[in-house]
Amino acid sequence: MENADGIAAFLGVYEHGSLTAAAARLNRSLQSTSRSLLALERELGVELIHRTTRRCTPTEAGTAFYEKAKPAFEALRAAKLDAADRRVEPAGLLRIGASVQFAPAYLVPVVAAFMQRYPKVEVELALSDSFVDLIDANLDLALRIGELGDSGLRVRRLGALRRVVYGAPSYLDRAGTPGHPDELRQHACVLRTTSDADGRWPFLIDGKVRMVRVGGRFRANHTAAVTSAVAEGVGLGFAPIWQLRDLIAAGSVRPLLESYEVPPVPIHAVWSGGLRAPAKTRRFIEFLGADLKRHLP
Image (cartoon, rainbow, N blue to C red; front, side, top):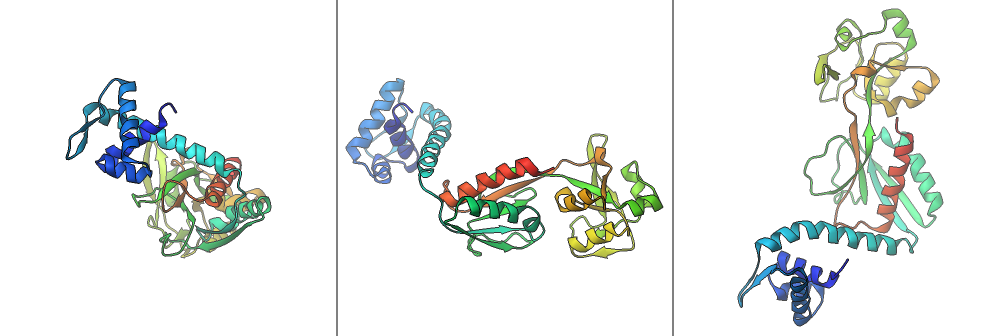
């Protein structure tokens, strides 16, 4: 990036309000920081920072320049650091949080492959179906399924997960196959009692998401029990399709009403701290993201 020293000086003054504070942040002398900023302004032909003996304030041109220069500068800095990090083999303990259901199906095989590629990395999984605090739990990163609120965590989207209605051939032979979500009211459905949408399943009908109320004689508070009941022909279920891939491959259940599926839910990697996660964390996120892209249905 042309005149990187000048841009770094400008960003420092803009964010910290003075040349002195910017110089301290950059670990440079006040004179060097001032010269770099002035050289950038001369190069651009416009004043970016209005300086007085008491304070430094951005000009209108300075604010506009900051909004575009800041993300570009950070992206370049991150790319340079990432390139440098690739000379160093990841090592140390990597603590990962994930849901109880997702980890055995998808995460553990990826972890095993990652550990084989990077033999100096140790991995510890902390599994929970609730969103735990990363700092309190001493986690390097966690995998979160669903939409995220504003938590202050760093986030990278890794993919998206389909959710489907599914049923066993034995049930469908006995009760018939629904052709429209509204027909589920006449079917036995197996419900998970801990779900926020207990008894209401979402569908995309006429271009809009609509909740359809369902019911049945069997309920459970754990996903594995619900899935098992559906496979036994007790009724129809609703779940992320990744939870069903072995059952689908074996022919024990099959997806239904696929033309009415709602948009898939995102899966994110989240971590705390600064913009740059440690090399072991970033490398694992990249590794997992590539695997999910290949294997998620």
